[in-house]
Image 1 (cartoon, one colour):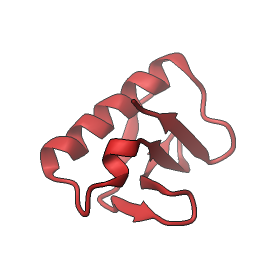
Image 2 (image 1 turned 60 degrees about the vertical axis):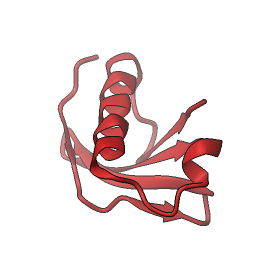
Image 3 (image 1 turned 60 degrees about the horizontal axis):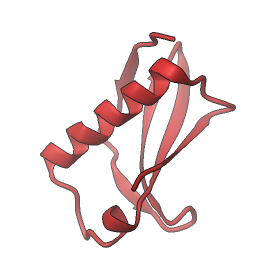
Length: 77
């Protein structure tokens, strides 16, 4: 599935989900993307290079998957 996503500039660490997250819009629907990674959890902040990598990971995920409800959980190694 090739879906366009618009990313919001709201990357932050979500303590409730114990993951970095940001929001985006896919087909008019607001979604929250959570990145579950031991390496990312150790970072106090994420630089622009890593942020762009996370956006690319999300785009690749969307090529093969459909979001369920309004959340995407991506497990990273």
